Image (cartoon, rainbow, N blue to C red; front, side, top):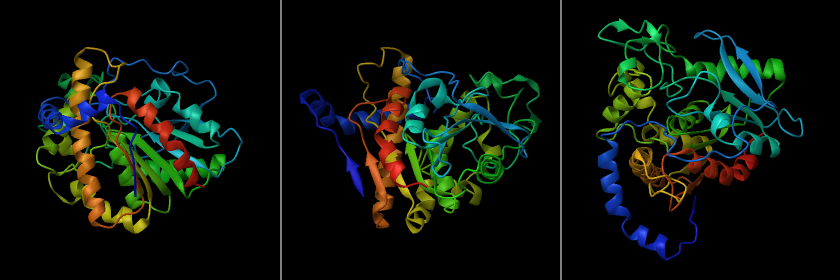
Length: 353
C-alpha cells in the first residue's frame, strides 16, 4: 500500500491544519447539495474536445444500440485496454473525458487502447432493478436535459427501458471489442470519476477475469454510510431526474453489492491493482469564485470522507494492492481529475495486458 503525498509549503501546511474543521463543514454541505460532477469554473486542457483520431463503436445491447468512442494505442497493440468511465451527467454524444481533458490522448501515447462508453447519466454503470419512474409514472416527456428535478417525468435513457450497464460493459461491449477489433478480453483496466469511480471498483470486484486494474477519483466508496443514500437520491434527481429506488431497493442485497466498503474483500482476494484518489476540497488557483466552486468543495469533502473510510476498511483486511493519492488542493472538478489521471497512468500501464 502506498500513499502519495506532495511537498507542502507554508500556505499548504496552514490549510492542512484546518483540514478536520473544513472536512466536517464540507460533509454537512455535501449532504445538502446535489452530488454531481461539476466543472468548477476550470479551463479544460487546450487539446480537449472532439478527437478526430477516435472513432464511434456501436454495439447492440439490452438497452438498444450503445455508442463508445475508441482511441487506438499509438503502437497499434491490441493487448492493453482501459475503459474510461464518466460522471453523473454523462451526455449522449461524447464521454466527458474526451470533452473536458486530453487524458485519452495521453493514454494512447502510453500505448494503451482507450474505450470511452458514451451515456449512462446517473446510472452508476449498474444493472438497474427497473426503468426509472416516480409513483408508477414512467418518464415520457421530452428527453432529459440533464439539469434539475424537473426532468423526473421526462423521457430519455434509462426511463423507457431498464439500465443494464454492467452487463453491457462486461459482456456486450467486451465481446464486440474482442471479436471486431481483436482487443484483449482479460487484464483490462477501468477507471472513472465520482459515479464512474465507484462503478470502476464494482466492475473490478465482480469481474476479476476482465479487470486487473481499477481507479477511482473522488468516488463514493461507502454508499451505505448514514445519509449517503439520500445524498445520492438528490444527486440523481438533479442529474436528469432519476429515481435511486429504481436502481436498487434500499439496503437490500442489490444496494449492498454496489457498495465498495461492503465488497472490499473481493478486491483484496482478487489482488486487483487499485488507484484511489480524493483531494482535500480546498480550491486551486484555477477554481473561480463562484457557486460551482462552492459545490465542488463540498462534494470533494464528501468524497474524501468516503475514501478515507474505504482506506481504513482496506487496511483492516490487510490490503497491499492499493495506492492512495490525496492532493492537498483540489475540488470535485475536471482539472483535479485530469491531473490525477496523469499521475496514475504509469501504474495503470504496469498492471494491464
